[in-house]
Image (cartoon, rainbow, N blue to C red; front, side, top):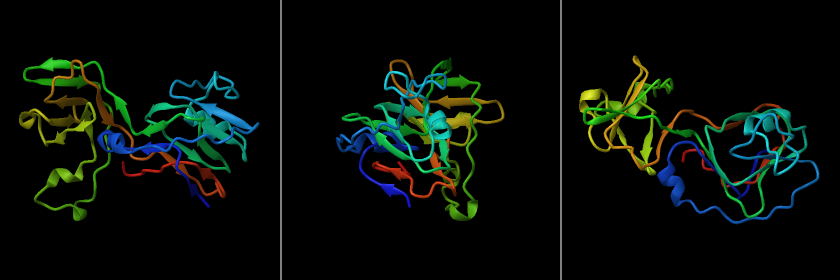
Length: 214
């Protein structure tokens, strides 16, 4: 059994959709067996105090079966993990956590009319071509890039990149965008799944507003 209650949002792809989602304000009691996580949580922390939070992965791996994992508010980029035991996941009272499959991309280099990110080592899987309309072949690609929460369109080569577009050069580990990133927040999706449920996680509860496709 996996219960879904309105508490925090799991956002795997689209910040612009996420921005439109209103998370319910909640105040679930924090039990004595709680462990805490935060966007800046560290695996070396104790996890037993709101001021000494773990990372998400550390909490899912180390919290004992039957305990509660409390998420502090904020954005959890590239939040992944697997639940293999009975756990309750909930937000800290009056705080709103966002679990996102993207990272903020920095370190852009101007390249003519484009901007380039070197060392881009993320390669997302392709969708089987039998599920894609041949007239829109780029629909096979699952890469996603956003500037200030607005999605860019993916193109198939560097020469076609213009404003509002991006290109992933997997061969040379480079990401190109046609928008000047200066003074903006550029995010790109780097994972295809967030927190997954294992076979041994019977009766786990996620008190959340779950948005697996957002």
